[in-house]
Amino acid sequence: MEWAVRDQHAKIVSMSLGDSPTDGTDPLSEALNPATAKRPERRVVAAGNSGPEAYTVGTPAAADAALTVGAVNGPGKGVDQRADFSSRGPRVGDNAIKPDLTARVWAFSPRARSRRRRARAPASPWTAPR
Image 1 (cartoon, one colour):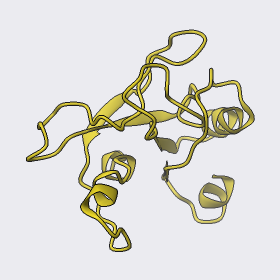
Image 2 (cartoon, one colour; image 1 turned 90 degrees about the vertical axis):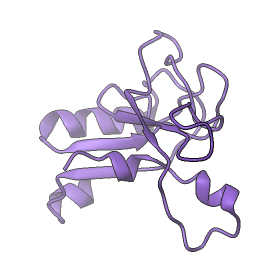
Image 3 (cartoon, one colour; image 1 turned 180 degrees about the vertical axis):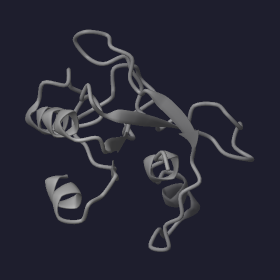
Image 4 (cartoon, helix red, strand yellow; image 1 turned 45 degrees about the vertical axis):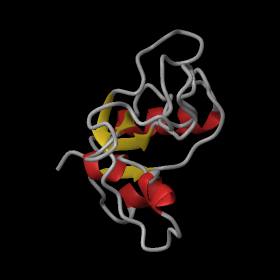
């Protein structure tokens, strides 16, 4: 995160990485919070692929400063219904609202070997504010 902002002058940092559900006080979430507070750029983070159960938003998507994005289905798959794989809130511990928003899954991955894997690509890169 710091490299992208400090050395590359990024205005938006989009991340699709994560781990187990958390209350946002884990080391990765904590690293995201102060970095965002000091600078104006946004950290856009995919909610994760641990749905459809509640309380499945992991780190760093659980960070207070993360603009956390969940996925909804695109055309032909129950349009505008939350994708079954998308992690869901609320956040573990304090029941804070996460994800902050949802977006249709319109990601493309030339390396994906199947339609299912392409469909599970993160929505966050496509929802970053421009």
